Length: 280
Image 1: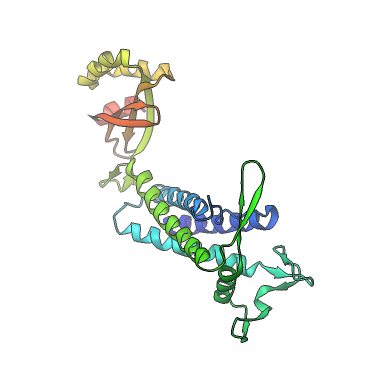
Image 2: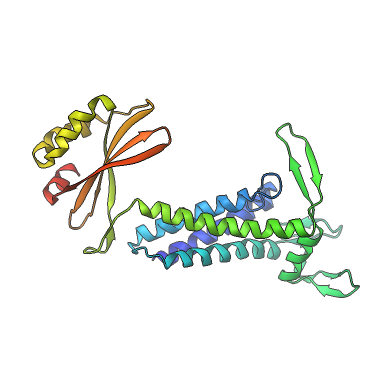
C-alpha cells in the first residue's frame, strides 16, 4: 500500500506543477530567491517527505535507514517527471509562441539548428539542454518592478542541479523528521497513535508532575485535566500527549516543554494497558 501512496504523491506533484504552469503561468519548481536559491525544490521536497512519511504510517511500514535511499530515488524520479511533463505538454503555435494547453504542434516534432549548424530533433534531453543554454531569468521585487538577469549557460545548469539537490535533501529530511515522532510496535506491526491529552502552565507543573509519579492512582485526576482542554498562549507552557498502540494498548505519556516554536522532551511515563484504555 505504501508504494501506491508514494506513487500517488509523485503524480499529484507533477499534475499540480502542470496546472500551475499551464493555467496560472507559475512554476512551483522554478520558484527561487535571487535566482540561485531553489525555494521551489525545497517546497516540493517538504511535501514529498511529508507524503512519504504519511504513506509509511498509513501502511504501518516500519522505517529503516535503507528507506532513505528510496526517498532519494523518489525525489529524482519526481524531478525528472516534472521536467518530462513540461516537455510533453509544450506545444508551438504558428507564430512560434508556446502553448501549454495542447494547441499547435508538440515541441517533440520541432527541428532546430545547434551552434555547429547541425539540425537536431527536439528530444527530451535536447529540450532540457536548449532551455538551459538559452533561457534567462527575471527577478521580481516586492515593489512590483522586474529585472532581467542573464543566466543562460552555466548559471542555469547550477540552478538546475541545485533544484534537484534541494528536493533530495528536503524529501529525506522531512521523511525522517515526521516519522521520528511515531514509535513502532514490533509485536503488532503498526505505528503508535498520538492523542493530545492536555496543556498546563508552569504554575501547575509541580501539581501535574506529582500526579505522574504514580499515574495509575491518579487517572481520575489526569482525566479531569484532559476534560479542561485549556490552551495556553503564553511564551512557556507544557503539553501532555498520549502515544499508544491501538492493538495491544501499550503506551506512554510524553511531557514536552514548549517555548515559542521550540519544544523539549521533559519526561516519558510508561503506562499499563488499563491506563491507556482509560485515557483513550
